[in-house]
Length: 312
Image (cartoon, rainbow, N blue to C red; front, side):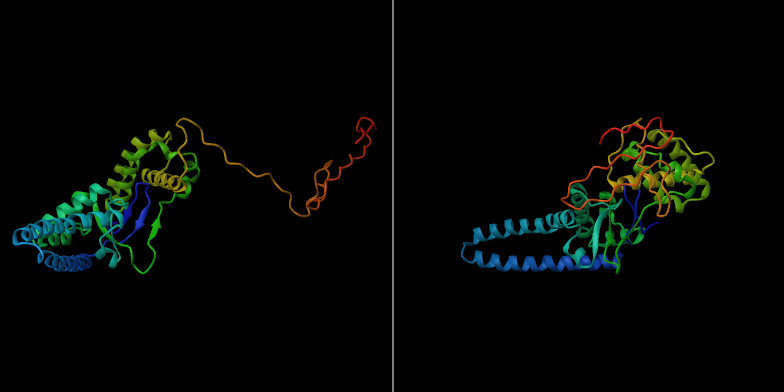
């Protein structure tokens, strides 16, 4: 499960984590781009300062250089990761910065990641970042840990797969009666954490975690535990219901309101089946634009209680 991301709707995204060498190459591409920008700025500044006196030229170099370094070191990665999902180096190699639940990072996350990155990349010449990313199972450096992000590969030769949890077969009847709208963000986060770690823990620990989840989440959705069902199966079924309802985009129903019954189409007799006694076949369809002709009433049959037929 280390290479999988689980969304707040309990959907597992099969996006592999970017390797450390690939991230280093992306960083080198960004440094090369920043070096080109600095070189162009230096040439432009030399042309401008040649027309100024020495004092004004020094002020321009100091102020302009400080502003440019600020833009390249802090603004560039923060804005590109927020708007594009990664720096130009990331995008060139098919990498993307996401949150730990697979969503796009917000401004706080990208700014935190960049600020801590300046300290661990510039302050230690990248040694601390390299060491942390190499030791972490998901390749997260200190900036990722502080911001709650990680870098994944989106270009893997095939489309990234999305795996939604499925309801166990013996719980499908129970699942259609459950409304996951009462879970809230905390409940969905709890399901996400359970799915993220269920395959990495012992069966006894998994059962204890599932029992604790059910004791907290079933009252929230107004459901009871099916008789004889294992705790892990019920938690997986609940996660599948939450995932399906989130995918449909349907608004949660009001709490305490019974789910509406699905409309059942009327039965249509198959070809060759005689109509019921006393029924009349439907009139043939009329051509477009032709008024419908009145259908004469059926003839009276003996025993119908009289032979009077009202006029049409």
